[in-house]
Amino acid sequence: MRLLRILLKVAVVLIGIVAVVYFSLPTVVNLYLNKNGERIVRDMITRTSDFAGHEVHFGDIRMDYDFFGTVLRLRDVAISPGELESEKDKIRFTLNIKEANLTGFRWMDFLLDNSIRLDSAHLEDFSLESSTPPLEELEMGNSNAPKREGKDYDRIFVNHIRVNKLNFFNKDSYTDSTRLSLKDLYVFADELEFTREHLRDRQALFDIAFIQGYMDEATVHLNDYRNAISAKDLSFDTDDRRLFIDKVSLINKLEKYAYIRQFEKETDWMELKQGRLELLGIDLAGYLSSGELHAEKLLVTDPELEVFRDKRRPEDRDKRPKMIHEIVKSIELRVKIDTIAVENMRVSYEERPDNDAPRSGIIFFDRLQATIYPFTTYEEDLLKSDTLHLIAEARLMGQGKINLKSRYFLLDEKGRFTMQGSVGGFDLKAINAMVEPATRVALKDGQLTELHFNISANDYDGAGELIAKFQDLEIEILDKNFGHDQNIFQRIGSFLANKLVIKSQNPTKRGELKKGAVYQVRDQSKFIFNYWWQLMLSGLKSTIIGDSEEDLREKARKN
Image (cartoon, rainbow, N blue to C red; front, side, top):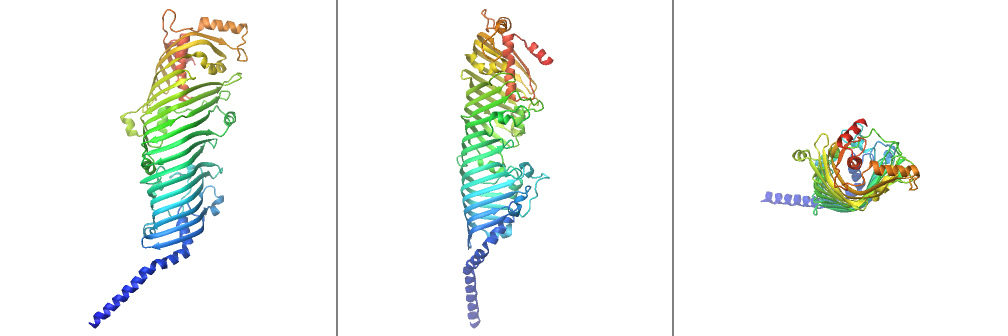
């Protein structure tokens, strides 16, 4: 019995000691953590490759440990490059956080699994600026890419995230110019996971179960910082499967002629304004985790595209713009969008001709509606059906209604495509704004009653048929100042052209209808829009002048 009492006493004492140790452990740990908190958190940050060599400062730091995890409260966090400031080949970060509240930090994950695990992260007023060499040098596998130093975590997992007002800027370390900026981003997210695999994969960002957010503006600068793509009022939600941008713009930072003078050869000046963009049925979580974009519909509403070209600049005969099938093949991102729709678009093209014209020519299309389907870069989908459909309608110069149906065969080696459509009636004098400066010829009178075309073409040439019905066509040769004050020779030239060269109407008074032949060799240095126009123009010329397809082919061979 005496031995039993002794054993009971020893057991009570041990239990007491264990209880004291157990209940006093958080206090002891908290004393240690708060005394060494700055050093511990600083080492946790600067051990990683991205922040190796950076300096870390805290305005205030508090830790509260219990057996369920550690709560970390940070105020006025500042991370700066320090001695890396002058090293342009290094990735440098400047980070400032007004307030960060982190809960449920697991020390066992950190110490044994080289991982960061949090129950929640609440960040207020988060500003991050990165300075990096040209982005192509940072790609994995690039021998010129700076070596990653430090020890990255195998896994970072946060169960709940809230970010209030994040601003991010990425700058070119060689030029100090901003490449990418994100302004006033607000995010709610659940189950974020970032692993070493995400770090190695340049397409994937992180895994996420739910994310919802709003951003005031995102801007990407390109073309040696002459242009910028801006997206304003952006919102996204994985539950609604929707991404919305109220205003998408392609901004040209220079005035037309100032921009063009930046280049030795002929170059387009371009701006896109007021477009609204919606991605519906988007798998946003899948895109963030794999870099593969799946959506049911991309809708672009009310965009205005303005293009300007100065023909007095020498042509760049060495460039070769890609055809539609080549553009799709060149997209590295795996994309699958069931339907792309454009509503109420306006497109204007202005051209300064290579002559003494006192003004530029201009042509525009408005009320443009277009549907493209299905759009995919997946090779397995293209092997089943490689046909991309385009259906569009618009008004030419605010009058003639255009209808177009096109098909593009994306796996065809020659880039075969077809075009069928029509143009409704309009006053031909409406296109003088484009014709007069380029040709010093005006359409004095004439009505197009209807036009139909059926064309098959590829990367090299195209042929087909065009039927244009018009009446009372009459031209006028302009004077040397591109005005209407003709001299006797110009009046004679206009008379002979109207009587001997062009047909004033089609069909003729006897009811004979001339079908125009289409044949055009593609100018490999021009973009496909020019090719489309030249195909149509060949049919119009053959209708008015009377050339057959054989005549057009013979002229093409001579040229």
